[in-house]
Image (cartoon, rainbow, N blue to C red):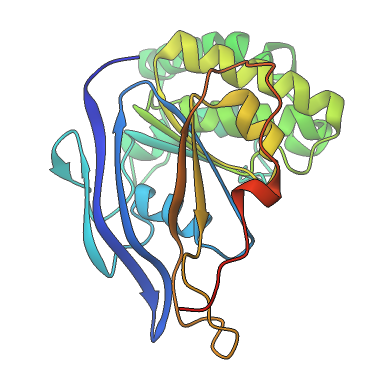
Length: 261
């Protein structure tokens, strides 16, 4: 892990109309950190991830990436993988991975030709080898298992070689055995590519197993008469050792009941 801060969040607030979602979020993350994010449903975990991607903007506060404000829209230096696979069903595995470069190269035509296409296809083959999908490169998404489709989604996110990889409950729909394989894959990719990762998960054991740092989002202030009166913030920021066999904390430890304030 580097000692360079790659992401700094200062006094972040996010609300939708009069309903606060996040409040007083402050965070500094070093390059190469694997941050796992846990919290109760509706506490703003995915909203925070979307702000890191620039799909949404903070209501107040700042997010700096390498010392600069985030762009107003997503850029290739930040890749994302969702729980639901965002692939094109009418394209093969290879075609799905070539598409982004084709659109960048020729927005009107949407195609690469000649040497440019051969070069991109070679890069895609190397990525598919890394991700374990080379044998399925000519298949369509409907011909892939759930685990293979998620590998394709991860390959899409990695195709532009992002500095930051954002994962929004990427393994929640997978069977336990496939999920374990995906854990190994994502840890190998993280170590090989020296990426900074932010992963939202509802599974505390998964967060504890994969992360080098676990962020817990919860509300510090509760009002039973106005449950949406306050936003969530980071209530625990726990350093972890990736691959640790220690027993993770319980949900009761991480999300204790708070008095009304």
